[in-house]
Image (cartoon, rainbow, N blue to C red; front, side):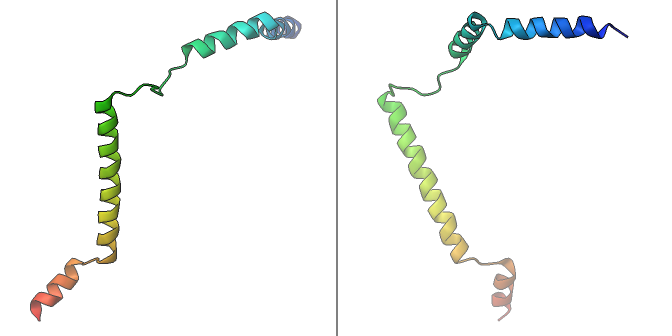
Length: 84
């Protein structure tokens, strides 16, 4: 078994180094620089038109499926109606 005192001293030193203000500032700067910017401030007209079409298509699809849900026909109903 390793010496517990040596491990405790090393742990304290590592904690002290990581809590130093310069180290924290450097870590924050690196984190800010490495983040991806997924928001596009400038959108070209073609991309804007595609986005609008995509949103319209989604809303039309949702309306279509909601209307189907209201007038839901099952296969069993179709089979029964064919027999009559």
